[in-house]
Image 1 (cartoon, rainbow, N blue to C red):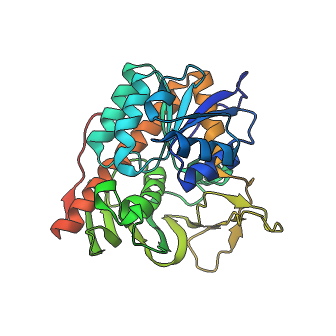
Image 2 (image 1 turned 90 degrees about the vertical axis):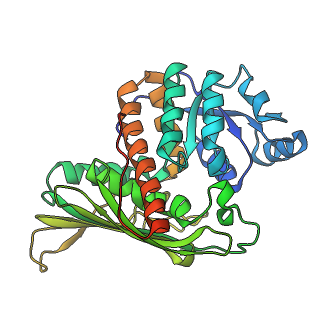
Image 3 (image 1 turned 180 degrees about the vertical axis):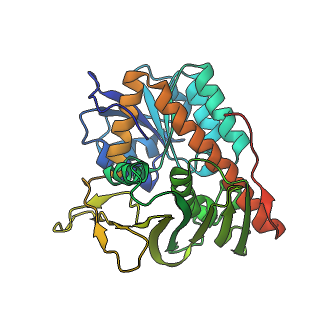
Length: 355
């Protein structure tokens, strides 16, 4: 996401909707930034909210999401609720005049995503989907390489993300009613990278999946087609060793990256387990052309995302939010088409529509 690099004159006051593990990690990292101040947390019960707030050092706790949205000391909310609740609470936050930084995937489908952006527009607030790696310096360096013609015209992307789901019984990722499954949980990452690189949604997709007894997809592999001949391959899984890789192939070279959410220096033994930022570029068509490592600045993607969000809110950067919204709508439409293709067993078109 391209936005200004200026520091807001006053911190953005954030409230946290829910107390999931990802919310704890977000508060831990984003709370260290001078650009944001995390002032309140909410849960459906006050005791739960207070326990979470006390554990992460937040001053105020609310016993309902509605109470946090009514808090005049909150400028914006971070929304890490289950996928099936994103649309409802992003829209309600917008109606309450709160800006929204929403965890990925933004919505269960394009119609939900469109309704969320429409609500934000009507009420004059910013809505941003939070893929932490989007805001990593490495991603900026990747886009600079592509826009600078380092590998010529991109013709193909291969992107994957998978992990081994521990203790699946009771895990929300196994519940189809909560928007579970490998595609929405893991596949949204490679899909977002493919959209970032290609700059548009594909015209059609072909997907196959394996299914759990609960009805969610445990793994999915797909081919994405553009009418100009470009292709992408996507894979995701919740029953494999952890991996996260992308290969971007151009007419004049290739780029390999792990597009990590959180990064550390190669010489650093990071206390939170952050890994070194890894990206390599081969300039040239011959296999003998060397792969050159690209070093980028490192840190927490949660903090980078919170700071980017604070900047666009402070600057009222409608253009930056508009570009991100276009990408989010394309991602939602493509994820919806991938799920449909996997269930129907044949190629389907990606729904198009006005941004």
